Image (cartoon, rainbow over all chains, first blue to last red; front, side, top):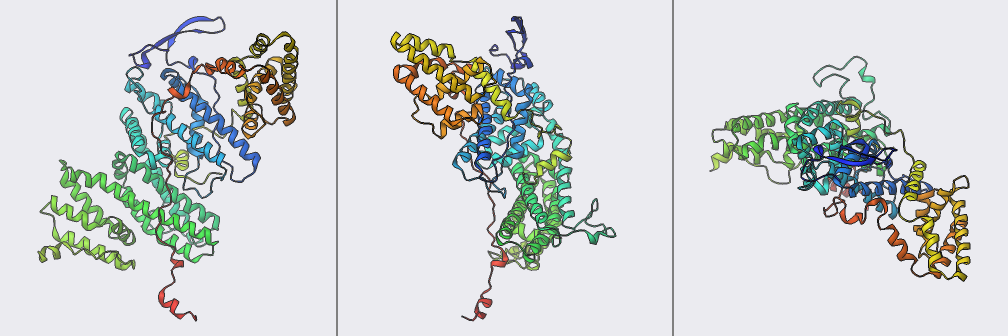
Length: 427
Length: 200
């Protein structure tokens, strides 16, 4: 084993190596110290109950589980040699993130208890391996220089943005605190990930654009304000596309909303980057166009009842997640600085009001947002921290909320909050 | 096939990931089984040690019977791994089968899975014959299980791996996200006034 109290990246070891059995001194982190373990890629449980397929799945998963447990039992230096130099390990982990069933997936996992037990074992081991890979200091003796750790994880693609998003959606529900620490440490030690995040956000917006396009609501490359191209009326819409495509579209949207929400909820530090790309306004206009369109398709088209109900639940879930994403973005870019009394508080107040004003044209979104996160509460907060707030503006906003509720035909679960002006007058 | 995912799209369209085709199976189950057999043969208990153990622990009069059982065990092992393998592979298979069937009364699901895990599909008759040989051998010498445990204490060079594994004390939750929808589909709503029109 390598010597103690020196970072792993500076340690050297003397080992007997090569066919001649000679002693050699090499860096502790060296490809020759990796073992030929040959990690297998992960395959999800079979969708049917054929015993041959289940046996094959169990055998493969058992190998993965044993190999990952072996990896977790390795001393710090050996673990990192394996992680950095064993490509089969990285393929195994990557395949798990890509193909492991999410609890939201439509296909129900096979009910065999042996399969379920095996899934649980692999699930835990994969998480622990990622946790160990995100930890640059395991103990006083076992650590890596933070800057070198940042280079190792980045240059070897041990983590990337889609992997971190997969980690959040797979493990985030019950392990949010640990995941937050992991991802926070990854971004702290390697700020290049913020650059990667910045590069990823346009692709996320492109995904929203693809959904709109598939619904026939926006032609390729066009913005909502541009006229549709000639011939675009021939494109399939949510009412005319094949049922399988509609199912895929709603499943895709549901996965997109869940993944983004899980990521931003666990790592709110990413909100600033999302906000700087104008995600909020794109998301609200996306919501305004897609939600009523898909609701109509689900109501009017002929479906198998169970499929129809499942799709409705997914659409409903996606709506809720989109509203929550919008709230997370506002909370971490505007509300938080206001509550903390930050130096730029006034610009945060203005930013928040401007965002609320932008919501006004998206009536359906505004009503749904207000249902979960009443605007009146936030406006009341603004009035407390910023006594000179333009009362006309806040009254206008609150009236717009009322009007949004009326125009979408929603009924409030609680009485409407009186406008700021009326409240002031009453007192 | 896995459903369409956001992260799948990001892997395809963004430039922040390593581009590689992980569908290409460099290591498959067959290759992995062979690897495991090779590793098994190198570590812990060996066939020679088993033979030596029975020679040392039996009276001369019982030794011949034990030799016959061991020979039978190797023969069955050969049937399980396939006749085209060398003596070393057959002996290491014999060791694995000896360990797997030690203290077992019948060929249950657990034993079947362990053998299949090591060798792939196998002959049940040969496995039953192995089990019977191991059972007769162990009856003749009581300390066989303790002997195997001692021999394997340092297998894979890990000692008691579970007690030192990273994450053993970390609480982990298996909870997953579920569909969060409390709004019933509108087509399930039957307005009261409509219900009143029904001719009950």
